Image (cartoon, rainbow, N blue to C red; front, side, top):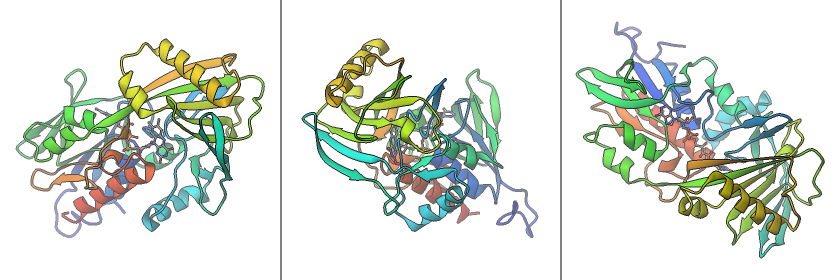
Amino acid sequence: MKGIGIGIGIGIDMLNIAVIGAGLSGLTAANILNTHANVTVFDKAKGPSGRLATRRADPYNFDHGCQFFSAKSSTFKEFLAPMLRQGVIKPWNATFVEIENRQITKSRQWDAQTPHYVGSPSMNAVGKFLSQGLSLVLGTAVTAVGKIPRGWVLKGETGQNLGQFDWVVSAIPAQQAAQLWPEDTSFYTKVKSAKMEGCFTLMLGFEAGLPLDYQAALVRGEDISWISVNSSKPDRNSATTLLVHSTNGWATQHDGLDRNEALQHLLKQTSLVMGQDVSHADHKAIHQWRYANCSKRTGETHFIDHASRSGACGDWLIKGRVEAAFTSGYSIAQDILSQL
Ligand SMILES: Cc1cc2nc3c(=O)[nH]c(=O)nc-3n(C[C@H](O)[C@H](O)[C@H](O)COP(=O)(O)OP(=O)(O)OC[C@H]3O[C@@H](n4cnc5c(N)ncnc54)[C@H](O)[C@@H]3O)c2cc1C
């Protein structure tokens, strides 16, 4: 399919497009554009998938970013269909509860009627699947995007030239995007004013099981907002694992907190909320997300400048959700295609 859309019949070379960020928004855009242009995707991490993330610590594994996602729009449902057919994503039929004042106030069973999807056997299976067939440059942070007469040049951490491109799309959190784009880029001010909040994630592994009446819990009125039994998700084949997220507010207020102090605080909170001591966990780890969620919506699905052939996408333009990341990546790709 490559070459359809431009080049063919009019005798020009296909455009080179750089996508910075191999999370869902970047991979969505790259997959759509890849059939019409030469697309290169850069990511600073060792693997693709971004916040659809998985961390392994044998015999445990944790989806330490996104917990599950749902699909409302027909476009997103269509996009997910091949992954569903091939078992890359599966519904997680958890018993879900809401906890307030350390009491379970609501409980319901998730089922096929409103599926709550997770990657299988781990959340990052989504990014791995979507990376197939793409030109992916991993372990490479893009540190600068510079304008040149006929396009853009990307620079890496040591100042190395990462290539010249006709189009550049950033698909990374707002604060990180603001560090990349030159200040005279037309959407720079809008990127710069978008804010994202952090999250601390506590990961606990238990050699023996843990008695619990639920697999997923939304927690209100505490410094933690979420508890899940990660090992209850489909195909985990892992010893018992608990995954706890702090609230975004607590994480933002305690941005510079020593990691061990953060771990101890969340451990204590988890024991109090669950009504059982979990400090005996055999594995304890913490991860800090600096850019987990967005507090303010931009009112746009993506930012684009057709004249300079540049754009920005990512969940933060819409909402800190997987479907929003998809919508943003999808819409910027369609916008670029409309001009090719
Ligand atoms: C703790 C947490 C819990 C969440 N829970 C849920 C949930 O339950 N349900 C839900 O729907 N959503 C949830 N989300 C949100 C969801 O994960 C995101 O909306 C979605 O994954 C964002 O995709 P993205 O492509 O916009 O960004 P990202 O996934 O952040 O992708 C950006 C990528 O860019 C890379 N990158 C950044 N800077 C550079 C650079 N300079 N050079 C190269 N690469 C770079 C990063 O390594 C990353 O891979 C959660 C997120 C977090 C952090």
